[in-house]
Structure formats: structure tokens, C-alpha cells
Image (tube, rainbow, N blue to C red; front, side):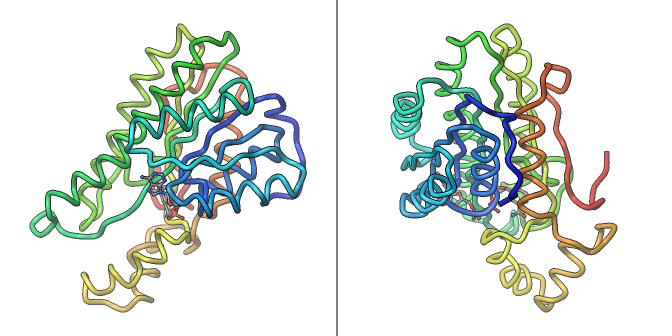
Length: 266
Ligand code: NAI
């Protein structure tokens, strides 16, 4: 968590999904440090509560919200809980996600559906629930989708992930157009590999699938095309999300932003 305090999001209310862990947690903490009140939404309520407790202990404002982003009722109820607690809704970060490593030839259809439900269904449901409140406000509001370098290129063994992350570009671009009359802006943040539990789990899985060592997975598969052999950090991404949430005009709406230590440039 960054130590410097800012007031860039003072008075604003944000909901971050998947904020019990990894990128979502760092984004929630960074937004709280910038003055926002934050809803920590996650399947994992104990983890969400731990994030909220850490923010409140540091002098910020946060509540934990139990939410499965694929469950429409849970999304609507959790969104209402945020608005009941903090009185408005300015920023959604649709971040919750998982990874399943398998080939197109082998992957059960149920796994494909599960991935698309979480990454695309969850993004749709949380956006729709947010718009109900954002449309009632005149001040600008922001939706940030957690894309990936895989929103722009493919890797083997990740078909539903690559498909879903590409799909978020379409959702964000459509929202940029539909949201403009309501002052709603949308963005896609596209990280390279970040060492969160999602990636830690993938290292042995990819080593097994590809028949190479875990060291080779990290050095060649994950970081081989970066300019410096470095992982992207949760703080890199939290600072990018803060920049976008605080950006003062609609000039950047509908765009995606890659942060990957030079792995992919476009
Ligand atoms: P993580 O595993 O550390 O955190 C993901 C969080 O999402 C967990 O707290 C989990 O409980 C929650 N979650 C999973 N399914 C959920 C559901 N149905 N409803 C609500 N919450 C749910 O993972 P990480 O790495 O922080 O990933 C966050 C997002 O960033 C994902 O969308 C991922 O695809 C994306 N991303 C991650 C990268 C990485 O290298 N770690 C790179 C590019 C994108």
C-alpha cells in the first residue's frame, strides 16, 4: 500500500470486486488512501473483511460486501449495501477473476462457461447494477474493467481467459458510448503478469502442461518478452487505476491501457 496520502478521490464512493486479494485489494487500499469510501466485494467474505479492517485501521472508510459477481441477486443486493452505507456510487472496478489452464481440445465446456460467467457475466452484472445509481448523479462516474495483456494477444492454454479479456474491450467501448450522456466513463486496465495468488497457482500448472520447469515458466513464458525481466506489481496497476478514476475529462473514455514492462506495446 502506498504511504503518501492524496485527496484525489475525496467524497467519492467506489466498489472493487475481487478486493479480498491481489490487484483488487491494492486498488481498494489505494482508492481509500486517496479519500474514497470503498466497498470491498468478494466471494471470500473473511478476506473482504480483512481488507476493510486494514483500510479502516489506517483511517480510511471501507465495508466488506459478500458478492459472487455471477449471481445477479447478490450483485444487486451488494450494490445497494454500498449505496446504503455511503450514499452514492462513483467508481466501479470490475476486477474479480480466476484462471483455468487447459487446451481448447481438452477443456470441459463447464469450465469455459465458468470463466465467461465470472469475467464477462460479472462485468456486465456489476456494471448494470452500478448504472442504476450512476445515472441518477450528475457528477462524472467511472467504470474500470480489469483486462489483461490477454485483452490484446493470445497465449496457448488460456482460450476462455483470452476470449473474455478481449470481450471486455467491447463492453468498455460500448459503455463509453452509452454512458457519455450520463457522464459515465469506462476504461480497461491491462496488466502483464503480476505475482498474485492467481499467478502463483499457474506456475506449477503451466510447468506441468508444457513439460518445462517452474523457473522456465517464469523466465521464458511469463517474463521472457518484458524489457527488464520484471513482474508488473499490484502498485503499478493501482496507480494506473487511480490515475484513470481521477482523470478530469472524458478524453480517455473507452480506451484500454497496457502496463506490462514492455511485454506488449500497441
Ligand atoms: P487473486 O486470485 O489474487 O484475486 C482474485 C479475487 O477475486 C479473489 O479474492 C477471489 O476470491 C475473487 N473472486 C473470484 N471469483 C469471484 C466471484 N465469482 N465473485 C467475487 N469475487 C470473486 O487474483 P488477481 O491476480 O488479483 O486477479 C484479479 C484480476 O486481475 C482478475 O480479473 C485477473 O484476470 C486480472 N489479471 C491478473 C493478472 C496477474 O498477473 N495476476 C494479469 C492481468 C489481469
